[in-house]
Length: 119
Image 1 (cartoon, one colour):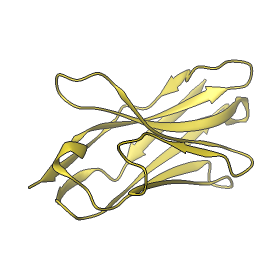
Image 2: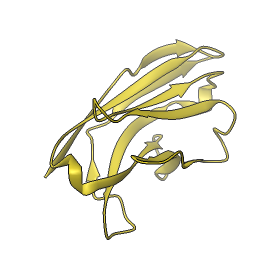
Image 3: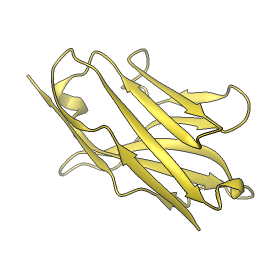
Image 4: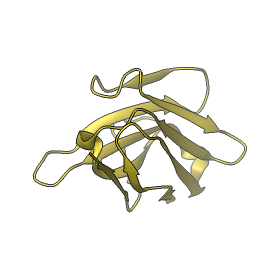
């Protein structure tokens, strides 16, 4: 199994920044890609960003392109989400997810961390 623990959420004013962290533990060697998703109240879960553990491949949801950056520290098995120019519509619970070799899905999820952006 793989355990994911997010941290770094909180309350920030519009225009501000936050950095989320996701620490992976357990059988991390089976994971090949990491991602961030978010879910606001009453809305469907939304893809935010993804990164492979190896190589420089990253991808972003349209609503966060140019404002959010995903990065990783392979030695620490930690993935980060730097969020700049935050907007009230970025308010959501942010989840870290991990995908394993041989699947196209994200098989492991963290418990989520709340991000609230005030106007």
